[in-house]
Length: 113
Image (tube, rainbow, N blue to C red; front, side, top):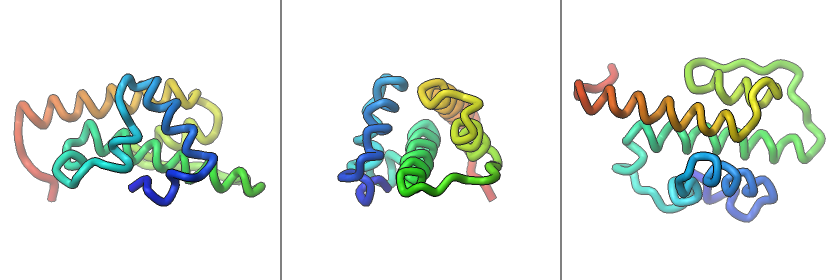
């Protein structure tokens, strides 16, 4: 998921995310296998950080979004992108959300249809 961004200046956000989350986000983006990413606590954090790394890379070219929107997890990305929520706070919120969703899924296993 993160390999295309690993050498980019925007990758610094991954280090910031790791510090805020207290987890190795770089591992999730570069080394995690499908089984590890199947856990929502990992997938949520990896998706959120990748979205913001891509946005940061785009903004470094001078492109600024005119409108931001998101659904479900994307709402957190949009709030951070809009500057309403700080990046490190967004990371902590998404990590807590992923943990809560994982705990709920572990209590009542199932799948989405």
